[in-house]
Length: 285
Image (tube, rainbow, N blue to C red; front, side, top):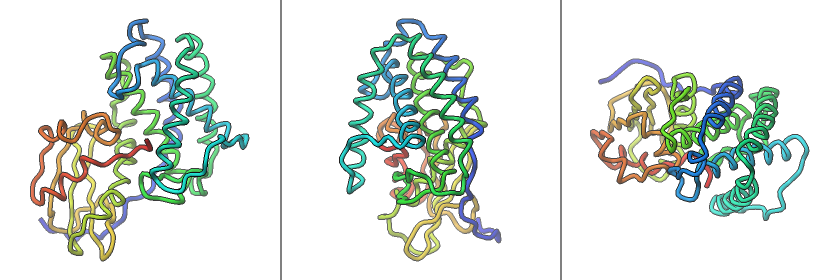
């Protein structure tokens, strides 16, 4: 179906104000876990629940130390995306190995402090100023603070959701539109970079729809030499991909294999164009 709407690239959005409430949900969740829950396996093959909690603590402390106090990790400067992933994976592994040995009570206490300080830091930033860290999975070498903060929200959200999934714990729940839609909107910002090597004629439009109360529609439009992400339907759809919200976050965070997700996904039109999203990763590592 054609429309006369004007093309508008996807607009920036602000998420720093969501961090305190999201972190509050995490602390409530961890406090409610049983000793057995802390040892349960998550969808991340290497990590149990206690490892994910340790990772959440480590990354906040490490980022605060770097951004506020200038403490730089002693690692080799990465020269490629692959090297960056290797560096991040190594730092994460070291951090988890340190904090996973803490008792749940001590870990929760430290998380409460780190989460509060991290939220204050992100809320203090000028959202339009240059971030210290670019969002590499979106192909950026320079990002604004609003995008780095949104990326931080996705990290905090999806790791907390991993714990909830592992422990069958949906109370008090974070799969709500207030939290999950901004996470999805941030994840989808990886689409132009992910599709950079998929060549189609100018004007080709791919429609990606995530179902459920927290979902929405995103459109990838082919200009002369690049893909542009928009929220507007601006022409005939070459493909339409429909993904349930229950598995969308897992697809973009390596929590489910593409071949496992595929039977739950509907694709119409150009199959290659429509299914390429199932290999998109919106995290580092």
